[in-house]
Every structure is written in structure tokens, then in C-alpha cells.
Length: 294
Length: 324
Image (cartoon, rainbow over all chains, first blue to last red; front, side):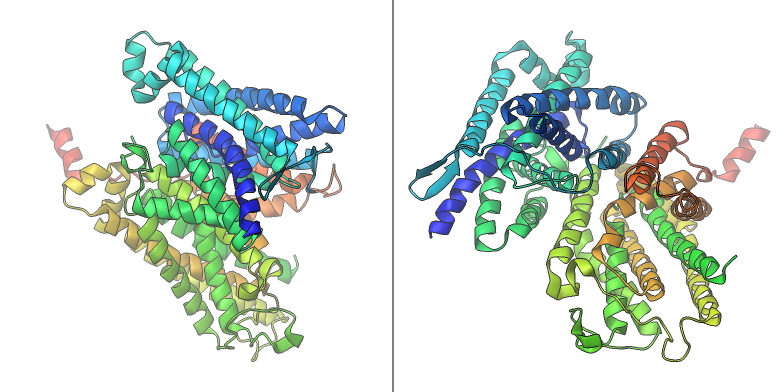
């Protein structure tokens, strides 16, 4: 029983990490209508940016901010240089998926000779242990939960109470109508890539902190968990992604306690398959996966 | 030129051609973005391996796997093809029925990554990350596999399969049925409106493609005699996609050309680059970067590929236009 209580604690951390990644992924998809399969590779690249700063003796919290900035700039450039030109040409959804997969392959393999094949980990004190009724977490893990909660509140505030958030929601709902209403959709989409890129970069650093070690090969796993949470909640729905993250994070950690940590991603995939069979539109979405691609 | 080098090249070319023809039928003609294609090749290879291997207590029991039936030649290949088809049924039923086309693609991609992770971690099933080795090649009890005669025999067997697959795929693609598939690819709603059932069409193409993919895996494993998770990672599917895109989507001759240019050509060209340049793993990594560039470059500059899909025009209409 103690094992499951401890796993519940890890689940809280896991869901925080997944929430940051999944909200970024789902907002990218919801507003720009682009399934960015290079998301996991951008995450891992940002984790490496923080790693090199950390190796130079800079604290991981600064590295986290650097990772977020890197992720934002990288995602922004990715859209400007590769995705946007293809979209302007009217490339189909499927064409864009293939393009983003090719980008993902290129990013991973450009990185490989630079960072090497071997797993690395951050050189930082993990902080003291905090115990609360069987749950044992490090202060770093508590801080990750805190970061995630603050970010979710910020996203909520952005979408609900700011002009930019309103413009984002309008662009997501109907880009042509939004443009006709005088919303500069081009600039809104730039902002979306910056914001979601920052979330992506930050999620990469946090995910790397939460695992013992990481390597390039982890990019695919990061993508799968973010994808599973986003699809479970209803793709394109930030609040859905938060709910999805809570479920995926908790279930994978509990399954790791009950079964084997090697199969965490398999469990996430199992949930993904169940959602696709039983409720392809996800928990919250009205359209989601069922609508015909344009 | 060394005989072994030549036969090796020919068998690989044959396997890649078979795979590209199947993928072209699924992706080029029918518009199904099968990102888990390599899984169907892998299941064919594993099936052929366990059908032809002796029980796992042989060879001192250094590897563990289920099965081990020691069956004679055509059965492992037929079994591999059948396994590819059988696996296509549940996967197709989950993925192809209700999901939007881009969701289908990502579901299949995730399936490919996860299947590989499961087989790598679950050692008792198919010997985990180490994979299966010493798979007996066909007829190895009658002819020594290390002779030149055998090498040419294998090339011949592969060639026969290439011809069979080419005739089969060509029949499907060039028939009224193929026209229906293209109609579905271009506009699914319109195809439905004239009474075509896209789910049924996609399932059929998915299963036939799975059978062919399974066969290609069986041929490959008989030749290289080993099969491990590291040879069917998901980027291998991307190479085949690059081949079909470069060759020309929807064109069978283009698929063959793509198979010769991309998977075969790349392997052969990079063979001549010394691997001592730069940090370890630089050349293979750059090879993948080049594959990515090739896909993006072709999609941007020449999306129709080297051999574009022939335009099927109703000739009567053209004649009337000229006279009128």
C-alpha cells in the first residue's frame, strides 16, 4: 500500500510535467491546425540547452528559463522557415504531418553528433526530502508541481482575460472570420508559436529533471505522452489537455508501481488506443478527431 | 565486383522494391499514411524466423523465443505474409474506421514506436533487444548457404516475389478498383456519395499491403539470418516514404525507381565515405538528416516525384473537344 501512496506522489509530479507539455502541444494544434511531430525533439533540444548551462555551473532554474527561451525561438523559426511556407502553398494536413516528421528526424540527427548517444543528467542538488503521510518528494519535485500550477493559471488567464487570448480563441475557431474582423491572425500565430514553444522548452527541461537521465532517444517518448494527454482531453483544447495530463500522469505512475516502469509509455499508448476506439473526439472537444480533414 | 556484394545488393533492392510497391499502394494510391509500415515487415520477419528456427533450447539455449517449428521453405515465407495480413486487421479496425486522416497517421506512428519498445523490453517473447540470430535460410539443409550458387538461388527467389508483387499491385492499381481508390484519396466524401465504402476500401488496401510487407520481412530475414528491434525502428518507415515521394506517389514504376534511388542508393553511396570523419556516428546521423531534407525538398520543389502519377483522362472527352 505504501508503494501506491508513494506512486501517487510521483503521479502528482508526472502529471505536472505532462500538463506543461500537453497544453503547449494542444494549443499549437488547436490554433495553428498543425500537428507538430517535432515537438518531442524541440523538448529534448531545450533539455540539452539547460544541460550545457548546468554543466557550466549555472543553476538549473536559470537553465529552465533558458530552455523555455530556446524552445520559443526554435519553434518560432521552425514555423517561419518550414511550416508556414508549406501551409501558404496549401499543403494538406497529411502533407504537413509528413513534413513535421521529417523535421523531427532531422533535428534529432543534427543533435546526435553534438550531444552524443549517451544518457546525461543534471548536476544539481535535488534538494531535501519532504514527507507528507507516506508521500516522499524532493523539493525540486515540489517546485515542478508549483511551476506547473502557476503556468496553468497563467494560460487560463491568458486565454480568458487578455486581448491576445481572445484573438487566439477567435483564430482557432475560424481564421478567415477572425481576419475579416480585423484580428491580425499572422501575428497571433507568431505569438502562439512563441508561447507554445516556451511551454515546450520548459516542459523538456522539467521532464529531464524528473527522469534520472535523458538522451536524444527520449524525444519520441516525450512526444507520445504529450500526444496521449492532448488526444485524451480532446485535441486543441487546453483545458482538456490539463485533464488528460492528470489522468495520464497518475495512471502511468500507478502502473509503474504495480507493473514495471519500462512500460509507462505503453500504458499511455493503451489509454490513447482506448480513447481512439471509444471516444475519438476526446473528453472535451466538440469536433476533434472525427471531423473530416480539409 | 564481388559476387556476395552483388547478390547482397540485389536481395536488398528486391526487398525494398516489394516494400515500396506496397507502401505506394497504401500511401500513393489510396492516401493511407501508414507510418507503422515497418511493423508489418517486422512481424513477417519474426514469424518467418520462429517458423524456421529450431526450438529455443537449441544452440545451447542462448536466445529465448516462442515457437521454433523448423518448417521447410515455403511455409515461413507464407506464414510471414499471413502474419502481416493478420496484424493489419485489428490495427486497421482501430485506426481506419472513425479517425480523421492526420489522426490515423499519428496513431500509426505511435503504434510503431510502442511496438518496438514492447518487443525490446519483453525478452521472453522474441529475445528482446538482442533479437533473433542464426535464423536458418531456406533450403539450408539441402544447399550450403555460403556458396555462390545459393546466393544466386536466393536472388532468383527474391526476383520471383518481386514479379508476383508487381503484377498483383499493378492489377489492383490499374483496375477500376484502383480508380475507386484514387477517387477516395482525392475526395472521400465524393467517393462516398457515389456509393463507395471508404472504410472497406481502406481496410482491403491495408490488409493487402500488410501481407506484402510481411512477405518482404520474411525474405529479408531469410537472407540476413537475424532480426532485432534495432533494424525496424520507426525512421525505417520514413526512408520508405522518402522513396515513394521521390519516385512519384501513385506510380508503381516510380515506387521501384524510388526504392532503387533512396534506400539502396543511400546505403551504397555512403559506403564510400570514410567513417573516420568527425565524431563517431556523424555519417549515419547526417544520412538521416539527408533523408529528411530529401522529403522536404521534394515536397517543396517537386511534390509529384521523379515519375509523376499518369493522368487518367477519359479519351472520348478529348476527341469531342477537338472536333467541336
